[in-house]
Length: 279
Image 1: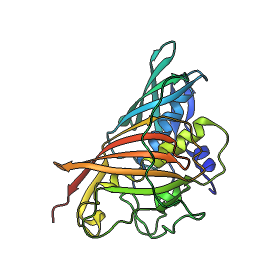
Image 2: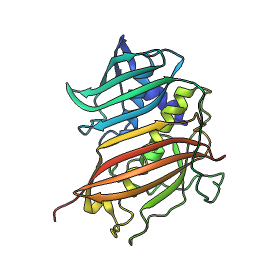
Image 3: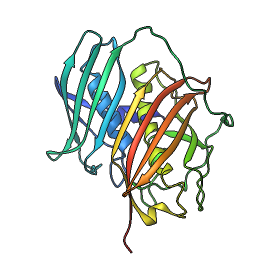
């Protein structure tokens, strides 16, 4: 695969009947990357709503680690179709067991008053991506490609991860390897994928561990996205993440995805497991 469009073609859920789909995972990975299954659920639900509707919010729970070598069954429940809003519930299963579920709300575009925070002032992105070939996350192992490369996403770090305690915030520029088609659904799928890259790792910034993979059991527990404005995800977008609190073996993170012109494209939130390993 040479671009994010190839990734979408590989993982796109195939419709079995009106509200059931089946999809595959990219290989190699030890357990399914959460951003993939979130994107797949959105892609499946999109096929069951009218073309005038666009997803505006998504709330999800990661229930079990997914096996990337096993197909995923997606069950879409058409909970409600209203005049301007529709809601879908999607359950992803493997071998009959739920591994993930999400509720997605859709809305017709309409006019209204608006306001927005100002985008943080950070260094503008360069043309080229950072070399992350040596980076390994919690779902990869030595010798395998990292999830950035596997899913055809590029990243430039604004905030470097340090071995000592640092402020609880992390910023990076991201983009999907393009070009992407002029299609809102494709760009939303890319945004969903990117949204799961930085939130979990940000919870470790205030804690002085040289290698979180060695010291922690870590996994995403839930994930929420609010889509505010269409964006071009094959152009650099800033992902501004912070972590207001950690405790009880869990860390809470928030994120804001910004276009370079200062448009807030989406907001995210996630709680993650950050359980210290017993030695």
